[in-house]
Length: 294
Image (cartoon, rainbow, N blue to C red; front, side, top):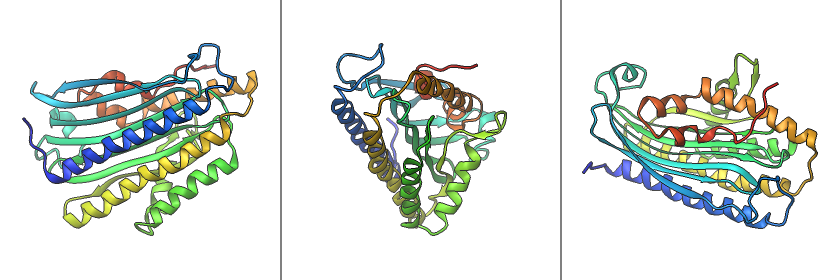
């Protein structure tokens, strides 16, 4: 049995507890919206998460951890996935060259939570959030959250960005300026010459090699999760009862093409999961349930 150290166990436990609270909140929103108009193919009853555990083998064929895929298809949440994973083992030699600290020693540990919500109502924005802790010969945190509205509402965008600005400022005056700019750069789609969404935060390689670094950047990573939990459900609740037109729904389906293109072509998490033998369905749960390209 693989033994994890205190930091690894703390991060893994936090991501699991955050998953439990987020999924409970999303199910509560589904229940609150039970009587609202829904898509023709929506279930009659409010959606509930279905959980599928999975395991992986590492590059050498040895057991390499796994995770749990949680997916809900409901009336408010057309499709939402909230996944957790804890994987370990060895990177394959070529991929190791691209990971900090892995070229010297291919052994690694990674634990995290990943969330993508695609909403039925085009007035409720799609959203993405993930946070993670990685260990090679180096240790670091990464993550981010970004809002992806098909029909942007300025007050929703302002609420989302200001909440994460406040979260960054609670930990380091440089975090919000740096991580919001990184988000805008990272979630830009070069072949479309436009951003995927309206921004948020993105960060990576926040060092955790010393106890002080671990404590500071784990605290920030936890705050990112808490900020998401306090912010996105508020946006969803205030928009989910708004009526929509067929044209607005079509605009949503066209917008989802941007999301699919980014995740399949540019997203680091997709590449990391596939290159480390992760569960393919869990990795691709970020793709929307219905999309239009024209």
